[in-house]
Amino acid sequence: MKKSLIAGLAIAVSLAGASAAHARTWAPAASATVHPGVMTYTDGAQCTANFIYTDSAGAVYVGQAAHCSGTGGQTDTDGCQTESLPDGTPVEVTGASRPGTLVYNSWTAMHAAGETDPDTCAYNDIGIIKLDPADYGKVNPSVPTLGGPTALTSAGTATGDTVYSYGNSELRGGITQLSPKYGKSLGDDAGGWTHTVYTVTPGIPGDSGSAFLSKDGAALGILSTVAIAPLAGSNGVGDVAKEVAYAQTHGFSGLTLAPGTEPFDPALK
Image (cartoon, rainbow, N blue to C red; front, top):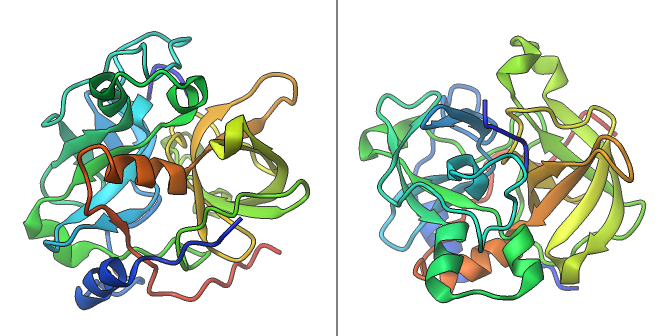
């Protein structure tokens, strides 16, 4: 388990990125062993994968939270101040036959860039793991039971908007019925870098890094924090569109969200 669970326009996937993503033949969603929601283990820290990503060369990646490879303490949540394990660190991905490799960490990128914006430092929380090519045939980008993501959105959320998530912490003891969750947004904060949401079943240790979808099934964010106050059990969800855009301008220009192959049709309404 991670030392701590720290912590408008809809942007469609770019045509070039979408073409690269759809050109790949994904494993069937029903039998894929690597997908959003699988567990990742970085130097013993347990987290949940969010979305699947590709690049212009056809490589396949899975996302986790940047703090999953952080080396600070429980209260070290500022990515511009907290150190992380280096790029190249092996990451075990449940369902993959071989370890993946950490190739991008927003905290490391912010250190290198000399980032000083306090909102970016506090909420830019994404890590990207490159899968071994031997495992590409085991991957499907659809979110289990929910479907999607349909696209990447920067539209944010309004107070009262419905959101969806899929967390798969081992603390649930394999009870997968508890994995899909729905809730309501309490609105955006920090210039849109974070969304405070409250789910019927709040995130627990091990859910860190998991995907959040908008009411329309677009990729909205990544679970970064679970709050104790002012609203116990509320989730701090980093804006994935901003996090991907930051990566694209800080060393990972080809990073692209892979849309799900399954239609967004959540059973939870």
